[in-house]
Length: 99
Image 1 (cartoon, one colour):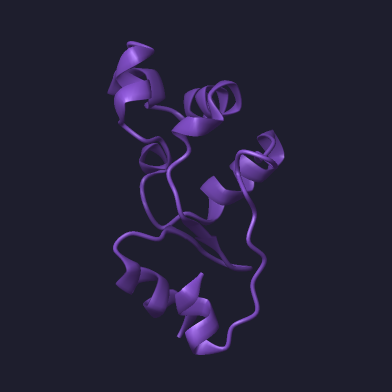
Image 2: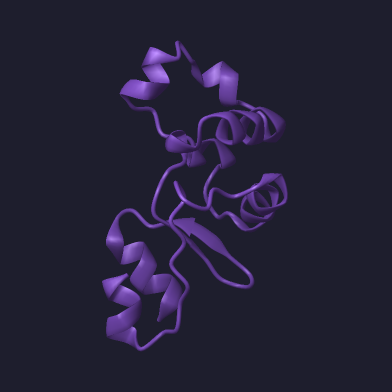
């Protein structure tokens, strides 16, 4: 993450495809998330191909279940600190969180 490097912030980058978050990690992210939990789910072509709707990802349990089954639907980047988590879009949000 270029912004973290620019600010001199140490970080760990995790490739969600190679190391997808497990249920405990997803629930931890949700508990810290400033955004609505449903924002963690990408509404892209795969979401549509799976014939999912907003009602399928309306609760925390549904979100966790969908993301465990379909890791590609995880919104990214997600920036997690000890106390907060955000979806890193737009990039200015990352700068604000890490500054």
